[in-house]
Amino acid sequence: MPILAFYMSRNIRFLKDLFRYYTVHPLDGCVDAVEQAYGISLGSRYLDIPIRNPLLIAPGSMTVNLTQMQAIKHSGYAGAVLKSVVGEGADGRCSMIVQRKKPSVVRTFFNPGDTAGERPIIHWDGRLDDRCLHEYKEFAGNAKAHEESNRFFVIASFLCHLPFPGEDFIEDEWTYTSALYREIGYKHVEIDFCPFLLGDNYTADQENVLRWYRTCTSYIKRAVPDMKVFPKILNLEWGIGFQTSMAEAAIEGGADGLVVGNRIYNPEYKSGHGGEELRQRNLKQIRTIRDSFPKLPISATGGVYSGRDVYEYMKAGAENVQILSYVMGRVDKPFAKSSGSKLEKVFHKLILDPYDGLVACILKEGHWNE
Image (cartoon, rainbow, N blue to C red; front, side, top):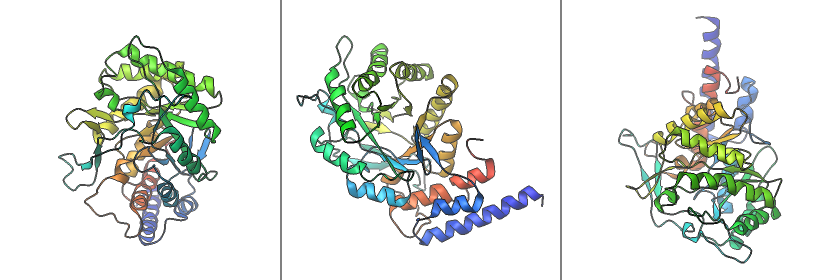
């Protein structure tokens, strides 16, 4: 056996041992054990914040209360993005209140080829958080207190007034909401251009969409100059060129990075849709945006079910990867990890699976930064 193959075989055998060990033991020390054993780092970044590993929980129904935040942190994830709130003006006005809707239906969907039920896609008719801004403020402030330097990071997410063509922005909603977040300690926010905007006929005019991306970030920066802003790219149907134009418009407005990208709105399901189609689309977008803007920080999201999916996003140029459907949805095939929560079982598989886990990919193909 060639010497390189011998060492690789030995590394994978030890990874299998780690994988088996953590199937029955808590994940405390899992990342440290990997790094000590192999002399590699799983650490990454969210812009200027070092994070312990590249796995974040995306905004949604898994990030709406403190019990969930504690569980996410305990399971090993590097951070979480709070479910997006709908912003208000100083007078309490909320022009986008239609987006403040609790889901009445949440269901797991499997693509026809997924006969084993391993890759859930979540469909729901809810939109952003249904709480008013000041009720939400208390939760967001308490969630921020769960941060731990270099181990767990909490990010805010919101949406305020978006005008139709020919309308003016209600700037006060953007500036007031931004200042409120800064008051409770947030320095990093995402702008959640919700996929339901497509269903509400908001996105028919290309120039108006580009106006959103140029203007919203500039309002946040005007109110809070040191706020780091990551707009989320909508998945629209005008080709990769327009996707890049949205990224360029966001940068013109002062964006510090991007989230690529939101789910694909499917009128048949009356819901956003994810899975393999979303991951392939987002991978293409990340590579294209990275070619145009090599230094732009990108947070990837969409269709993540294995460590290899994470690895491919990182190799494409993302700094970190956000996950939601896999930890929310029903999975018919049992996880290898026999103890712990669903969050822990997913983390165990994504990091340690000896065949397609993140560590296995690094051992076989090299670190994503190489």
